[in-house]
Length: 212
Image 1 (cartoon, helix red, strand yellow):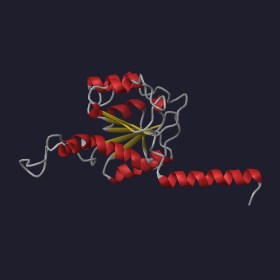
Image 2 (cartoon, one colour):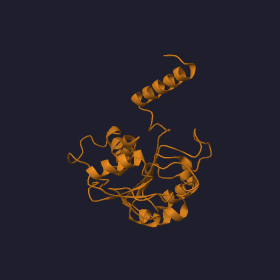
Image 3 (tube, helix red, strand yellow):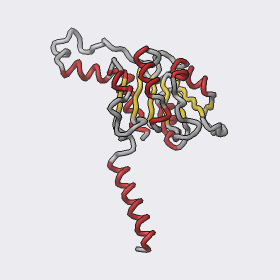
Image 4 (spheres, one colour):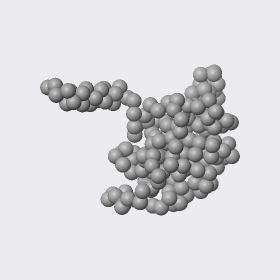
């Protein structure tokens, strides 16, 4: 799941949809120079990566982000004590400081609807939001409004409030589609992960039936 978080990030951070379309529609043919610079992007080195939910996946993301040179901060919605080796901050600081904010938290009374219009107003206008946790942590109508108004730069989502996607999803009303990247809950679904899951289920069935 950590690798999918980074896949979503780089797709949005480096404007890959634009550059892929630029090449495939023939724009790069006989271009003036070998590099097309129309959409600029920055290195992760020196950015602040904020994490909501520092469980096993959140820590993995934090460690990889640190390898890229990002400064990592995190917020615990449940108020859990600070974890050694990681910089815990309050929620407002997480929102205000994060260039990238990724969600890896469970859905509970502390997180449901936490990312709402008030939260988006406190974020940087060039911030990228990533959600690989649970869909209802984000108020989707508020996020669609934030993207349309430019309150944040972009969002990458692998989870939605209703899955499969509802036909009246607010995300269908986001005008600039390059600012929104959605995948159908596949962050967990690598072939190896599904094979491990099947082995676990098979083992549980054997244990239940008393089969060696």
